[in-house]
Image: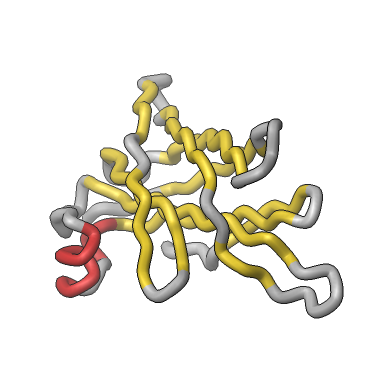
Length: 130
C-alpha cells in the first residue's frame, strides 16, 4: 500500500518524506528522475520547506539529506540522495532495494539551509512487490 506523504516540523521548517515502489512511477517521471521502474526498488523523496509565520505557506529550500534504511533482517542500506530542481522547487530523491512484504526502517538526517543542526526523521514502510 502507498501511504500519503508525511512530514515533521521543527523551528519553522517542515520536512516532507515519502517512500513508494518504483514500479508504480509513471514512465515519464522515472525517466526524469533517471531511475528504472522495478518491483524490487522504492523511491525515497524528501522536501524541505521554510514555513512563513504569517501565511503558514511553505517555500522549498536547499538542504543536506543523509538517508539509510534497515530491513527486517537487519541489513543496512545507505541511500544516495540526489538533488532535483524543477520550476522553483527543490527536492531530494534516492533509490533503495526492497523485497516483498519487507518493512524498512528509514533514518534521515536533514540539515536545512542556514541551520547548524540536522533534524532527525525516522519512519517505517512496508513494501509489497508481487
